[in-house]
Image (cartoon, rainbow, N blue to C red; front, side, top):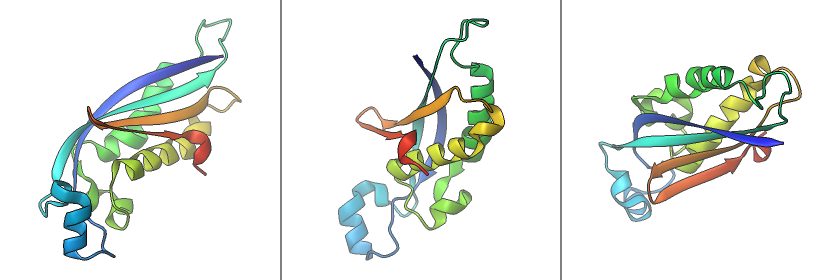
Length: 144
């Protein structure tokens, strides 16, 4: 069994602000990330996939098909977007990197069988680097 990880990048802005909290509570909780005008990140996303080696191709995953899946369902809808206003989910869910990683994983799982109809490969995890100090991971098995 092999794990293949592909790295992708996109830039997006967001404001961390929970509507159920007061302005003061949001400022304390999110600090500078609660800036009313938002702020941006250059996100680095690692998509890890697991599968057996295909004897005919010598590969565990067709990376071209993986790139197309990520491009269509992650990069295109998120790159150079204001997550709060241009991604409907984040109009109601705080666009933390945890929630972003969860949503990326959910989107890939939702469309996985369209691109990889067999038993292999399987989506294993998403790793999202917001900054060099803020890195988040979510396992695909944790997402419905």
